[in-house]
Length: 455
Image 1 (cartoon, rainbow, N blue to C red):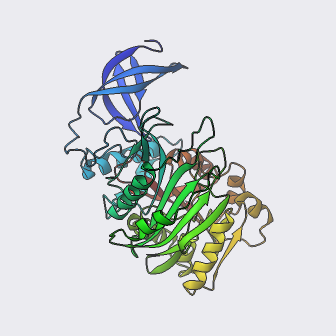
Image 2 (image 1 turned 120 degrees about the vertical axis):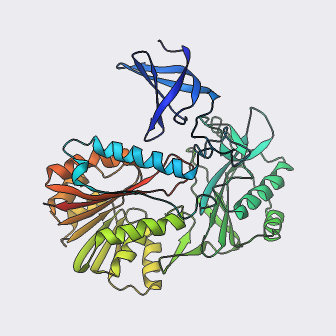
Image 3 (image 1 turned 120 degrees about the horizontal axis):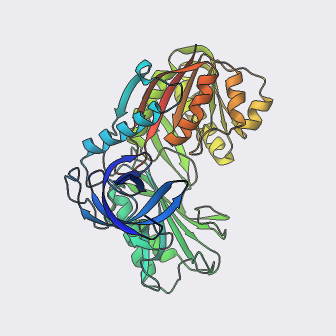
């Protein structure tokens, strides 16, 4: 086969992340966005180094694993949920097999010697996300204004997703209200190519345990508009929770990310509260907080179990975000030092620690690599929760140089974990325990937790 050819085949299995395999004769072709057992039509779009990749064009026959009807009206066009036609049990089984298979392929790692604890399910399969970023756009060129999630595989086309099953119905009602407001006004959305237009994103955050909601409208500065009527419309909504803040974020950057050059509070406050395992957390617009608070309790309980008894120990929590893990570890440690490069997150972590009465927990706003170069204290235990790209290659040798007895590694991207693990093994660590936690039901994503002990 050559680039551009169209063929049909059955997806044999799906490897992490979202990598479906189709066998045609002696050829193995990667086709993303499929489910094992589906018969699909695809087009070869890449062929290099003896490897072929195809773009899924159409599902010809459903998989035997697709045992239920779609849960929302935009499936399968929306790129948010891949697996919603599978039962939750089948989703979890497939994800667990993916992570176990990845770990089994690590050179020098024998999974027969690892206490594999399998997959821990989310307490909620649906309506679990406490944060969602929606985009303004159109579903087709020059079409009517849309507000929601991107079409699968598209950078530009946006679907209006008012029945998203990943978020609480409150957030869908707010999205519908904002969409209706702007659909009747001649305010253009921001075009990524020409860099012209106004409306960019709608960022919504809701405390799953408190019901407190932050609404962020993100626009450029290319047009001033009176938003007082929108504020009144939002506050008049009948919601299960309650809006505590409505903010207008001005973003003139060229990149398609949610950020703020200027923040205007239209009503209320700029933060909300969430509780997790008995601790209270103040969360602002850009504070990192696990998107699934329910599964986060499962994840952090497992982390705390892996951390174990550390009453006389100093703990480094590297890549600490808003300090959630650090504060949970502080209850069983002599001292915890959290390191995070985002200043806003560090400030939130300090405030949260003070609110929770923790005096043995401190936070440093610094790059992990720079902190390790300057740190005078020596940790007894290290907790690692790096971003998706994993640990910085230059930081990893410095971490290993401490030679601590235990390291707990939380990974939100298993392929980054797999890249890092051989370095731990070479340094004399062994993978003692491991599990995965399904924080992102219906999607391809999964968290992995590892306990590494020094032999």
